Length: 78
Image 1 (tube, rainbow, N blue to C red):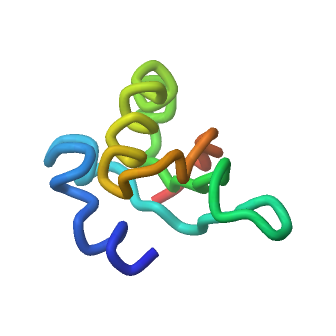
Image 2 (image 1 turned 180 degrees about the vertical axis):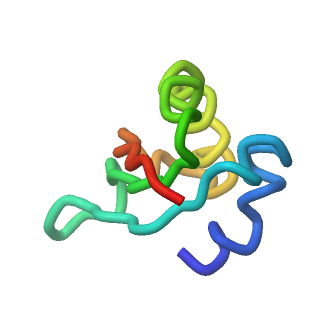
């Protein structure tokens, strides 16, 4: 999670990084793949983030080098 936070802007790009922040990474019990990333998104940006969710997941998994994330849970807030 620390690497994800520190490299968030390079993973998703400056525009999305300025309006979103990963909060929590949850994996199924006993697994290190197929996780859910809880993502806090600035008000008014949730719809845009949902629209590009497949690309964001692809970039995150490319960053880790394996299928770490299967789904994003988008939470709207400051």
